[in-house]
Amino acid sequence: MSEKIFEQVMEKLERGIETIGDLKLTLTIGYTSRIMKNERLDPLKPEFIELKKEIVKNLDKLVEQAIKTLKNHFCEVILAKTREEALAYILQEVEGEELVVKSKTNTGKEIGLVKKLETEGIEVIETDIGDRIIQISKEKPSLPIGPAVHLDPAYIAEIFSKHYKVPVKPDPAEIVKVGREKLREQILAANVGITGANVVIAEEGSIGLIENEGNISLITRLPPKHIAIAGIDKVVPTWKDAITILRVMEAAFDLRGAYCSFIKGPSGTSDIRGLEVLGMHGAQEVHVVLVDDYRTPAREKGFEELLFCINCGRCFVACPVIQHAGIEIFLSEVSTGPIGLVKAALIKGINEAVAIGLFLCTGCNRCKELCPANIDIPGMIEKLREEAIQKGIILPEHQKMLESIQKFDNPFGKEIKKGL
Ligand code: SF4
Ligand code: SF4
Figure 1 (cartoon, rainbow, N blue to C red):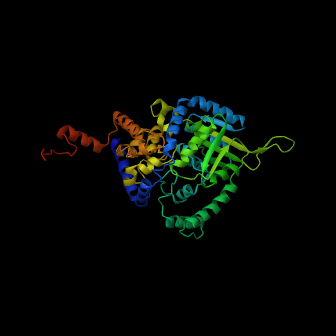
Figure 2 (tube, protein in one colour):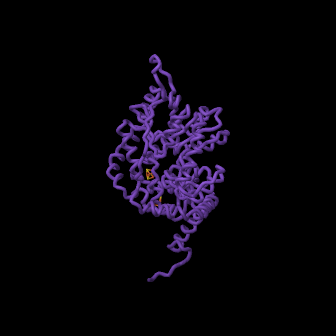
Figure 3 (tube, rainbow, N blue to C red):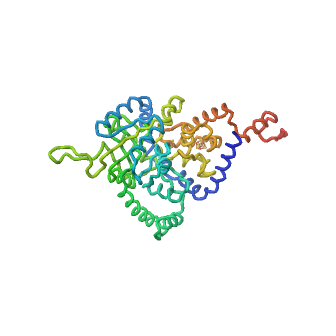
């Protein structure tokens, strides 16, 4: 078993190093840029961390409250204990559809949504331009919030030209123009829009989404059905708390979140004789899929800090292992980056974590230092390593080093003369 995992790690390293060029440059610029030292984030951190601690402590009650208040606003709500339950519900809601449009959703990624829908013969169109580039090019994504940031514009123009059968110049504005025109047609044609939710407000019964492209605004308004998927960790007590979290999300990458949407159920009107009719310009149905899956087990296993994550990607930029060994490191089907490694261990098991690089972490602590929630990712990685070792998953190279230390008091496999 260890040999097989070792081969997988080596394969990942080799593939990763092949993709290193632009990524290394992007991450080096990102890590040394003002974004990582940004002064907007630091003042927000203490309140944010306290809030997250309180939320995780009271999560069960908050989830219960959110379900009740959302239902009061004509939302259909499901609390999915597992990813299978979440997928089954979504499949039932998209039955008969040939096309769905979606925005970025980390929870959707974790539950394997796109793969499942495609297996059922449903075409899924990513509407975030970065995700759409990755979808068309079939390249590996990099930063969670900028998945195509490592790709050359000339290359993107080439793959867009081939895919859309129109000439596209290697100019960002031109690429975006073509992407927008093509996506607009697909958004108008779809009956279902699937999004994530950055916050779910328990007191108000409302979901909140922040974006800069405007695709979320369109796909939550234009298709008649909107399905929002969110981990239960996205539930917050009040509006004020929701704003705290959205401000941290913006500040984490020094971004300008051009749009914030708070959605409190389907659109509608009572303008005709005061009779309420659901569905006017916005969605007629709003479904909220709250997913537990690995979150309760994470709390029980002492990994509750995992639920503080807002998927900002700062730990990805910070990590020297990704910077030097490439995009494949810590990348799995369900997540990416240092925090993604921990998530993958909880979702797919310890073997998966070892195969994507559990033992490659240097314990440098950079990810924790730059995380808006100061999540102790290195500490969690340490715990997972202990678990792997207890289960006998030790890589052959490590086994050799161990034997050498026992025999020669050094890891180099031979006796070394003491002296200067
Ligand atoms: S502690 Fe590990 S995961 Fe975190 S930045 Fe350092 S090498 Fe990467
Ligand atoms: S662990 Fe922290 S830095 Fe990494 S994505 Fe989550 S919130 Fe951002």
